[in-house]
Length: 145
Image (tube, rainbow, N blue to C red):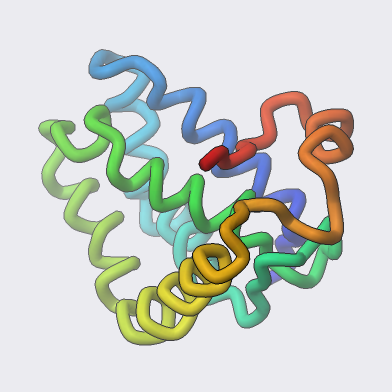
């Protein structure tokens, strides 16, 4: 995987913007691209299986930020525009990528990171401020409590 954290953040942010509408041509086009075995599914697989994840990734290119990559990915996968999309073949393929990595992704990464954030009582990444991230990427996903 030659993708850095910034690439994953931009990919997910763009996906959230593309699925902002509840339905329609844009969403179906997006689902078709994300569900494409040569493109979207590979990117999704890269993100789900990325070896290094942290609540304090900052802007480190070799570590994916839980708050700015994984949380928005989970938000994307649970968006009404996605869950109610009629393109079942593509939707099934998208969810199978996550399902096939359920133990490593959900149990070992997502749950562990959520526990860390709950213990801290904060979504903040201690290595980069929300302001700094937004200054670099206008459409960065910034979770709030």
